[in-house]
Structure formats: C-alpha cells, structure tokens
Length: 503
Image (cartoon, rainbow, N blue to C red):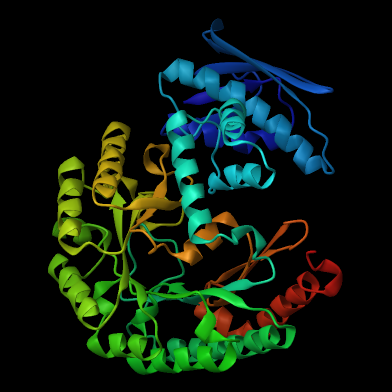
C-alpha cells in the first residue's frame, strides 16, 4: 500500500505515520507529497495555536472517501520535543481513524506503537487523577479500547500490590547481567546470543570482563550506600556456561554486591532446557537462587525444529521436573503465539501441556518479526497465522490463565508484533517477577553488566532516561570492558550526587 501524505512538511511525522500504516498493511510505503503512483492520498490540515486542530481526508482516485478531525488543548511544556509529541499524537489520531474506516480494522491499542503502554496509566496514578477520568483520557487521547484499558488497570493494580513502594525506589538500582551465549540461535531472536560450541576462549575472556564489571560496580554501590532491588541473569542463556563458571559468577556476586541476602529477587534465565543439568541446579541452590525460567515456547516438536531450538518437548518436561525435585520453587515458562506453522490447535495443545506442570508464572509472547532475525530475513520460509487466528490464540491464553488462577502482572509490546497485540506475563498470586515490573515501568535505574547488556539510567528527580549499551560482540566487549565500566560509573556519580537526590 503506497500512501501519499499531503500537508505535513515536517519529516519528523514520517516515521510515526509509517509505524501506524504497518499496523494495517503488510507492505506499506509513505510518500510525502501528491505522488501519482500512490494507492491512497491522505490530506492533512493542521493548525497549532493555543489548541491543536487537525483534520484528514482520505482519497482514492481523487475522490474523498473518509474524513476525520480532532482538536485538543496544547499543554504547556518545557521542550520542543514534548511540544511536537502533542502535535504528532493529534495527527496520529485522525490518521488512525481514517485508516480504520478504510480497512474496517480496529486497532485495540489505538495510536500507541510504543513498548510500555502501562507507563501512561502509572503516570496518571502518580498525578492523582481518578481512575474513571484516567481511563477516559486514555481512550480520548490515544483511542485505546476499553478492553485494553481494563488490562492495563489490572496490571497496574497488581504491580502496586506486589511492590507497594514502586514509586519510591529511585534511590535503589536493579542489575541486569547479560551472558551472550546459547546452544544455538533461534530463528526469531535478535538478542546477543552466540552459539557456545567452540567458543571457550571467547567465554573465558568474556567472564573475566564480567567479573571485573561486577567488582567495580559493586564497590561503587557499597561506597555510595546504594541498595540493589533485583538481579536478573539474562542473555543469551546464562545456563549455557559450565556449572563451575556459574559457581564462580554467583560467588562474585556475593563478594562484590552490597547486602545480597536482602536483594528482593534474583532470577536466572535457564530458558533452553538443553542447558539444564543436575550440577547447574545444585549451584543455583547453593547460592539461594530459586527463580528460573525454563522456556518451551511450544510443545510441538516440528515447531521447535523449524525455529532452531534443538531440545525436545520431552526434554522440556523432564528438566522442569528435575528443577522441581532440586528445590526450585518459582519457575517461569514462556509460550509464543504465532510461531511458524502453528494455529489454534497447536497453541491449545501447548496450554494443555502447561496445565500438567503449572509453573508459578507463564509469559505469553506474540511473535514479532524483529528486523535482524533469521525469520524476518527469510519470511517466505516461515508461514505464520493471520491476524484473526492470532487474536483467537491470545483470547485462549487470557481464558486459560484466568481459569487456572493466574493474573496478568506486566506487559510490553514490540514493533512488527503479529496482530498488533502484546506480550503478557501472568503469575500465580505472590509469584510475580519484580525485575520484570521494574524494567517495564522504568521507575528506577537498571545497570547492565556483560556483553550486550543495556543500562537504563533514570534521573531520580526529573525521570529523564539515559540509555547506555555494552557492545554485543564478545570480542569488542573483551577489548573495552574497562572503559565501558568507567563510563557507567561516571553517569552513576552524576545521577546519585547529593544535588540530584530526591527529597
């Protein structure tokens, strides 16, 4: 679908308009100006004074078919970026409306294409806006449906129940530790994940750098009296390394980090069942780590083969029981909706198999075609379900989790996600992952250590977010981890200085 945009000269509109077009059309292209080759033309009229007033007419063959208009107050703001954001949202409002009218498709998340919709509702709670008014504002400003607003409210309620001090944790930090190795690379994956076979030299060098980062950051935290809320070992697959390497890593954590015994939660992703051994489970138990993820993704063997996961369905089940027998009492499992070749029958089967295990939490992902993944580069090889079937699978997940006592406690969205849906974490009561809530709601600084680990520094006064990423490639990381550690400590010194301390 080639869409000619008329009346908007500012190039900053191009990307948000393209993202919204992608929600409706598999192949779309935004063309600025009155292009002859366009399939449809959308003409905007925009006025910005005390109010933002915008209208749009969608034309096909020069005939007006659909029209929309929207007006809102221009709120005072201290930055041009925030001012443009208000204008952009108003333009998106009429743009989405005419595309919904054209296609007959209702976008349940409205104009939102961002990752963290629940942040919007948290912000309104913090501002003291009554719930009914907050819901009305979300509906009016962003065109979010009642169904999704109710989901957001459920999640916000649950998060504040699990972490009553969620809005006052700016003086603490959480730690993400990235281990960039896996047995094999999954077809949908864009995480830093290198096949571990034959890479022992890289692993040894990487672990040396990681231990250095942990020592330095730990010393800084102790010196400044900064507590750690949660620690999360991700990747890759952190259980790809040997039991001995894991043992030394957790020993480093206890030696370097402050007050480890009182960290609220430590999680280790053991997502690939083929990496789990009795020896590794013993190491986890030794260091009092009992929250892990064992991720089947699907209980259909042909699907696992198609996406490049070399474990078997039987192995997933066996390793789950092994972990249970070793004392793991908080296990998360992941399922993915819309994997190649899967529809309602296959997903129903995965839920039935999950029922036999009843992990403490279940994260239901919707497949996203990430730009750099093998699956996106070779889309013709991977046939996936259409929008209606993906929505039916999501509804199955919602009903199944509710029937089995799970509640939604966090969600996030991705670009190019099937059906424009979401990823939702469900848990049994009091088994929620605190780290998942912290990373999604961006209420505190998260320090990333290791290869490909992203840090998110949040100003405790203004809430401004500064991103900082370690290199994804193990060699580049090994060559420069000292410099990256120093840069992170400089940012931390500024954030946690006395003048920047929250009242």
